[in-house]
Image 1: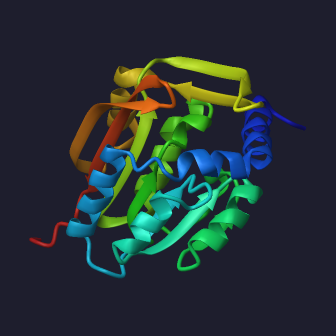
Image 2 (image 1 turned 45 degrees about the horizontal axis):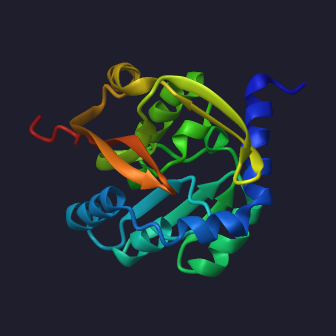
Length: 220
């Protein structure tokens, strides 16, 4: 029986499936400065060949290609099958998996980095924390977590976003920080930054979080 959560995710999937090419044409040229800076930082922190998981990869451009350009082995996950068909053509060097990120199963400690750009806020609010916990679990000790969230506490369903229905949710900045405390106890070197960027004609703030999973204590 469908739940509120599955209904919301179906809205997100159906919306992105319907506008896959149009959204790609809008998103691909947007080399947002903060995302680019953080991806380049990952390239400095991690060796070539590191395994990186990207949650909400969309059609693969620009972020998946940027991660591949850093020399990483990338697995991209997206709920939209139409977007993934584009991604496979755009970034053949990456691997792709279709599905709800919350339903993904990976062995603990599989990745040197886990990223989620402009995607976690498509989950219902009560799944943000559990998703963070899964992401941390998939990281190797010493691995890096990089994602962004919205800044205002809100649940929003728009009937006409680029011509389709779309859902977002946010815990707000303080809620995001509390989530890190509650679900990210294994994280260290936590950096959170609110960055302003233009989305079309509108100015929006995003809450960027970069953190490291605590390395194993080898000192005994």
